Length: 491
Ligand code: SF4
Image (cartoon, rainbow, N blue to C red):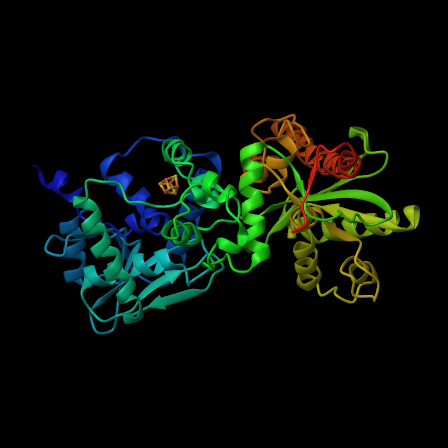
């Protein structure tokens, strides 16, 4: 085996990305690695990470002599020369079984070097970050902390406090290397759907009728239920709540009853109504925003405030659009003016949205521009003593219904042919798709800008039409109760 082939078996800090994500993914990377197409959103994040690294390099070059390493030997030679900053260093320790490529090695006054990475995240407490920087410390084998230049311009450092996590990672990776069976894990709706091994694992989870496929059943919950003899969705569907022991995230009769009904719903395809759905009175306006997390300040820039007003045809789509983050404030003010106009026009307004994101964003904008005492903001956030006109439809759905779906996202419910049955015009669209399109818009020429903007508007328009269709569907459920097509459960 050549040295290069040997190096493939050394543990890299970047392996921590898969390992922290899912231990089976780390195993599959080693034993069943497959080429996969990087989706455009991940590519966008990757490119933004490279840009952040380039910006960090430029800042360091302003104050230091920075030299780029071209190999392991060259890195060592630059260290011996005492170069102030070594860019794209290459470190290897075969005895420890480690190999790593820190973005920077920075010479300390003592003559020792400390590793530094540029990372787009703003969260210094991310486990993966701590492990990666901790492995660099092991490779350098000195007591200096490792440094990270975060996406919001701040820095953080890691010392011995991360050693335990680093050891756990290294030991686990060594075990996974020699393990012939793939690790037993549970399905996770948030992680598996964005994992390159999704199709491979889903087939197995479905064949096993795995409990963790069920909405609301966490991995730990599934683990404990299995120990109690309930291993599959079918078995859970046949249980009585009183007979199920208390397990993590599943305590109390009501929760257990919900889990059983969720299992029955998935099995039968039936909709279960737990309680009457209370929809607020007033003139409904449907509302959805598109925002860009990759702004220069890392404060999310809302490039589209989308609204659908009565009588809710496609031509009743209304919006505020901003071309770039430089006009963020103007966009926010235009949105507030529009809301104020609706308030005058319709008297009693319900601003219906799906998930808490819209409300959280309005609050963040009010804080960003010091406008918490603005009359429209106060009304929107319910700070005036009146109830807020913002109405989260997702909460209403979750509180009142149990649906035959794996997740309670807008698309999952609306696209379902037996539920709302609304299909988006652009099949591939979604919130990440929209972010990618907007970042393309930022660098496009005038002709392409128009096309991209039209597509983003069409997607957002479909989102608000979807929440309108959902509203109509929710209202029809009370009629269906009468003819018996909806099961009413006293949970
Ligand atoms: S699909 Fe899920 S279980 Fe499979 S490797 Fe990926 S995250 Fe792990």
